[in-house]
Length: 495
Image 1: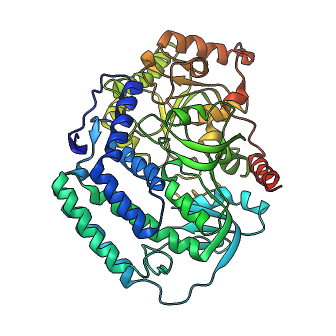
Image 2: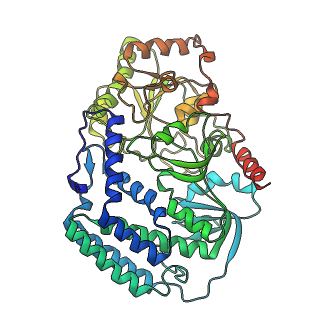
Image 3: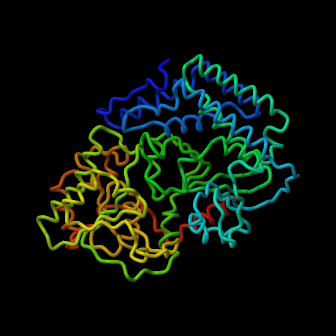
């Protein structure tokens, strides 16, 4: 068997071929006899069926695959097995030391909102939770007083009664067994297996005390088959996930798992299925996120106007899916520069996000130095003040106040179609197929050459573009009542 740290993809291969080779390797790794024996021990210790671990392990591996280099991060090396062992052993002792000594009262809710990592995230659910009789947030940060929430504070004060209460030593000795086979097999099993143990301890404690009918979250890359099992073991009925992003081969969207998936449009779930995601039910409902940050906010009146706005985002290690990726990424900005040079009266803007790090990107920074194109990564009410909050303007506002919109791979491109605002996806050479496959569905909204970009720009700019060629519901349904649609689906499912 090839070790994780020795596995290497040829980045000159298409994203589809790379994905096929990577997922095949991950499947083979997961099935290797030594690893399966360790998973079997883990299954017996916590009384969890062995098949409940496969999605979480595979998701963890794909999350730690560095597309820009075509290989896994060094954390899976033999040496790092020792580091992982001491890191997680210390955390295990920390959990035991800070465990709750009190009897935990059980509370019952209709809805639990999981995985809140920033206080403003809770506001995205503010309108949605009104449809439920009771709800609670599971958050890593303190929220405002008007939100009912459980603070998960670095594994402190967990009730271990349902997870490791009578098997603390058994778990401790299991850590040494995992280390032994990690060193013997020269692969860091500690990192991935101990991660599973932490997840079990966390959610066994939370769902032991917090009971709910539904569990919902917005991050698809933290969905979990294991969490799903623990939730239902403690009385939960359905796990829910709404689509916020376009799924990416070898990136976010891979191995996503939930009982119900609320997709943007009639066909936007198809990329998730290609990414080996699993959903029992799929319902197209529009954009949960857009309703929360656009329709539920005060109307903005001071947004600047642009003839063309590019909705951009920073580049991360997982997005760089082939050897020409960064070249293509900067080339699409060069298309804006070329259009600006040929038609200097056009007002063109690249819209980033606060703290997106694009100014620190040397390639993009050099592009800006040699361009007259406007770059905005702060909202108008945010400059020189501390006013930016959940009710501030959003890139949606900038896009809707511009004549033409384009993007590289932002989900907003789909969402804007539901508002009859066409957004071009710029894909030089048609090589960004990890996000936008070269098929009839995606080809309708993307351009692969400058000539096609300029032609389509003026069709839209001069109001000559024929929207009848596109079924907008395939990309995103009307989203001004998405929250209500989700509630009605859940309510009808009860009967």
